[in-house]
Length: 66
Image 1 (cartoon, rainbow, N blue to C red):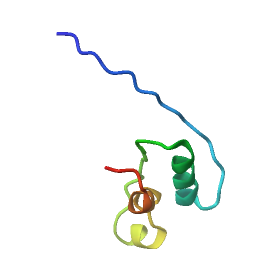
Image 2: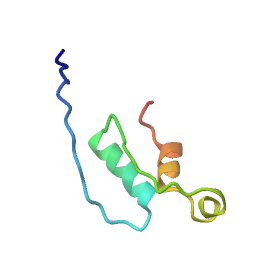
Image 3: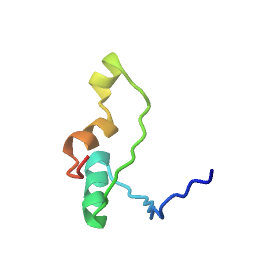
Image 4: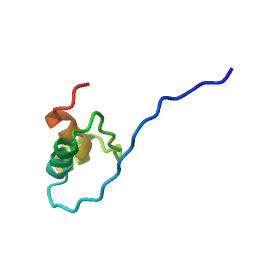
């Protein structure tokens, strides 16, 4: 059985900024993205508490509907 996949337009961008979550969210707003895909290094515990997580910050502040 063959499966068809609807056409999905994918854009990539390279943006340099010290505040990575803000840069991601700014770009998302600029291109009016429907979806944000962000990887994570899998930090936990103390490392996550002290260093934070870009993915977590983006998730908390994103206005893209889930």
